[in-house]
Length: 250
Ligand SMILES: Nc1ncnc2c1ncn2[C@@H]1O[C@H](COP(=O)(O)OP(=O)(O)OP(=O)(O)O)[C@@H](O)[C@H]1O
Ligand SMILES: [Mg+2]
Image (tube, rainbow, N blue to C red; front, side, top):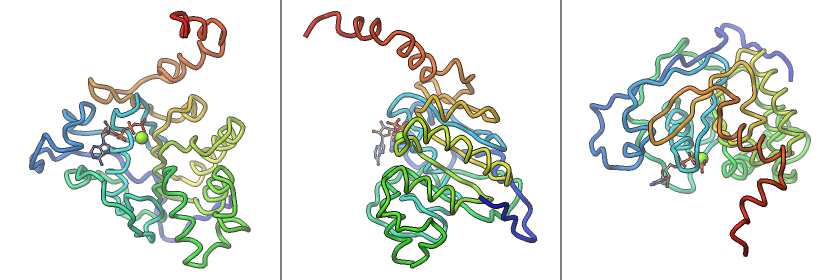
């Protein structure tokens, strides 16, 4: 990954905070305004380097990540700002009430990626005929993890990146390599917002971790996260945990 500072562009960070204009909510009982984590929210500060969204399944991480990405002009289905393919229409209207407090108006590069979007992004890249800057082979001819790593290593540089569960593609070893990619991107003054369940990925030190729950969204220390504590306690003694889980018998 080369240092590709684009001339005349002030480097990141880009987004200081996300404001929720609740006066614009037409129907508070409508999806996503009704989610417990999002219901009482009026402002969310982002870390200038990396912000992690963690929490239980269904707590609203992807919904909020997608809304912030869409408020930044990105396709809810994923990809870069040039990719506006559409295969479904299921995203929430949450982005319509978001206001972004920016450090800079100009963002050199921006992407929104989640596991499901990689396939469509690969198709779009093939159809645009710009494969060269994404590694030597079509992303379709690479495994999920290989395609994801070649995208982030070859295409991401200085920008604003929203990633939903990057670990879905990555082995533990590749997750460690992905920490190095994060580190390099931050060296280029990028800013990242990442929803993750991976105790490896959320360990990145220069980060703010937000925990999503029924009580709302609150900062949490890495070692206090359920992901860290449950994984640690499982790996300390898988036998003990399994015995506890199966104690009722088959
Ligand atoms: N298009 C939709 N329409 C209505 N409800 C939805 C829609 N998408 C998600 N939901 C609901 O909103 C809630 C939050 O979903 P979301 O995908 O944001 O959770 P998440 O925190 O990302 O979970 P996970 O960790 O499983 O990815 C869920 O209860 C889900 O059922
Ligand atoms: Mg999700």
